[in-house]
Amino acid sequence: MISKILIISTNREFAPQPVAPIGAAWVAESLTQAGFRVRLVDLSFEKDPAGRVASEIRQFQPDGVGLSVRNVDNGDFLSPRSFLPALKEITDCVKQNTSARIVLGGSGVSVMPLQILNYLELDYAIMGEGEETSVLFFRAKTDDEACRAPGVVCRKQAEPGYERTSWLSNPDLVRPRLHRWVDVRRYLRFEPVLPVQGKRGCANRCIYCTYNRIEGRVYRLREPALVAEEISSTVMNTSARTFEFVDSIFNQPEGYMEALLEEIIRWRLKVRFHVASISPKGLTKEQVKLMERAGVTAVGITPEAASDTTLGSLRKGFGQDDVYHAADLLAGSNIKALWCFLLGGPEEDKRSIAETMKFINTKIPDKDKAFITIGVRVYPHTGMHDLAVRESVVDPYDNLLMPTFYFTPNMSPNEARDTLVSGLGSIGKTIFLSDTNFSSLGILRLAGTALRLPSPFWRYAGYMNMMISGNRVIRRNWG
Image (tube, rainbow, N blue to C red; front, side, top):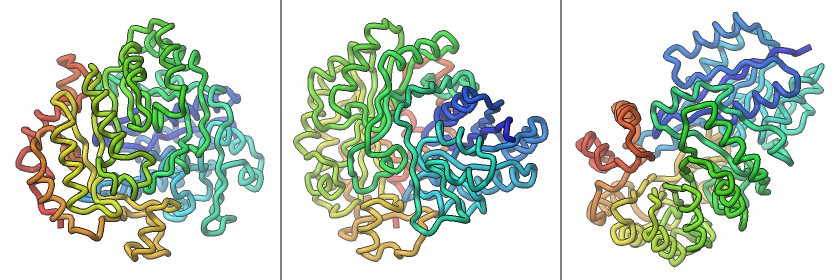
């Protein structure tokens, strides 16, 4: 009978910043409420992760082990790096030190569970949310019973393409209590912000995105009062005074953002908020003013392009006019915006990139920044995968475990780079994904926290760009 469970958060990526493992904490809390004795090991800051895992197994002697996997690679077309070899070192260490039942979970696993199980030579993965399924999995008396738990993918029983997803009908059944499971002080040293999630699910159908597989297409909304209570509890138990909503798209579905922010205002929480992602679609002046009233000081906004051609090919569900309208609304507010663009997608060409550059030059004020990703990571079960197969960019039998990218056939990467160099009015206000890989940026983050500089730290991108000026990706050959 399984009674002791070791949860291991395997993410060790620091670019663009270390991320506290809220999903692993959610699962650990759920298992604890179900009566298991649980220990969570966070490997984010470990210099010897395998050694730490072996030591924890020897001390705790778990009957079950759950490994949380955030990402399988860095998604960087210009500097690709897979996280799977390092992950295999950890999973091999687990297998060498215990005969406990092992299961994989997390967003990275949900994208392609069977492929990852085969690579790691493990038997079980949870696709979708893990709070409910992990309890059923570890309560199961036999392996066959464990395989029947909703959301569990079993390598020895599954056929290629097999999947069985699990999404909680009520995410309010468990609260993550991140501060109970993770040393949040270590994360707050790099940027004084902690994650919070208001809802799960995404009904959009962007051609490249995996959120539909990770969280499902149906929104599951948390009770606003419980989200506010979670924030209040974290304030009382930690030094955190800034929180980031990590929902897929914060201003969807219609009405939920308003209800949540109004509840936060009623609680009179003396905190600030960042928002990881809002959509230009349907953004209103009233919504922006409400965000300001609730203490939102920064947002990430994800148009991906400012060209109707590119927006249509990416299936964003909105057009250029929506992007410009959102820019006018945010420019007239005190909220700082990080505009996210994805260049090199289907139908992208010099003209469409020039349209996006014009937007960056004319509509993004000095208080805001542009974050630019080059190329599109191809994941299974996405529209991008279907297109890449049709265009013979990838083989239909490629498991896509290693970083695989799509780049528009209408121009070469170097032509795209030249268009950017000639078209951008100020390279200093742009951040490229590849620019976030320098280890020296961690020192800047520590200094920013020590000096109590206002977050988010991407607002100081100009200083970062000066520090790495000669090594910036815009200066390199893109091939």
